[in-house]
Image 1 (cartoon, helix red, strand yellow):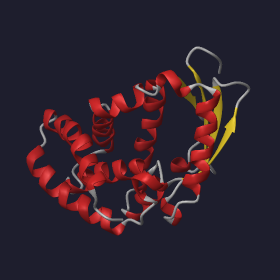
Image 2: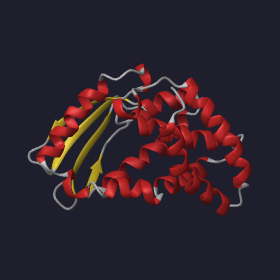
Image 3: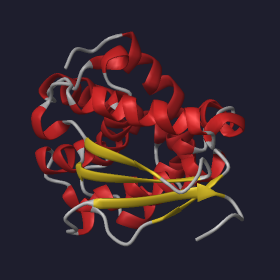
Image 4: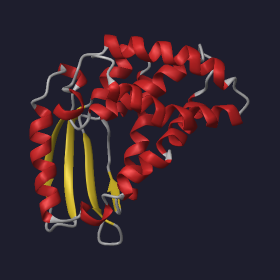
Amino acid sequence: MKYTCCERLMWHIIAPASLRCLSEQGWDAPALKRKAKMIYRQMVKRTPSVGGLTGNSLHICLVAGMIWLSIYEAAEGKMGEECFGNMVMAGMESPIVKASFTRKAKAAFTLSAQQKRAAKADRDNAAPGGAFNWQAEVILGRDAEEYTILYRQCGLCALGRQEGLPHLVPYLCALDMLSIDWMGGALYRTKTLATGGDCCDFYICKKCQRQ
């Protein structure tokens, strides 16, 4: 994968809030930042491209995962899993990240939105990247206020294996709940690839509608 403007911008969106969280816990954030930024650039270069920002909507998810894992690696084994999870949540709650999801809330649960999501999944599935790309099937629900996504392959799982950190990927899965909540929905799932399931089964519905 090339280190482009997208990867630079994502660093400036996610890393500051993540590092601020660690600073509040007593970490030397400036030192972590210096190490993590070098690791991040190297990680980007050794990770296969999944189509870039315009070719795969999940490219951003993979890049975000690289940012958090690079900060973890910069801690050189001194960061616990709970601390990692808190750092990820802090980065996710960056105002720009949150706004990118909340502004979708008005249109998220319409038939048009579900049809576009299904078409986008077909496009993303055909993107390059091998194991580092996602493979998803969107199943329309009884009406526009519900749908299901089955992920049979996850790029973050591949990234975790590449970096020798598969045990951290479930903490990245927690972000799905948050992002869907910001879009006005609720996520229900019984299994994930990151925890050994044969797929990630997302049932998504508009809040307070049905379970």
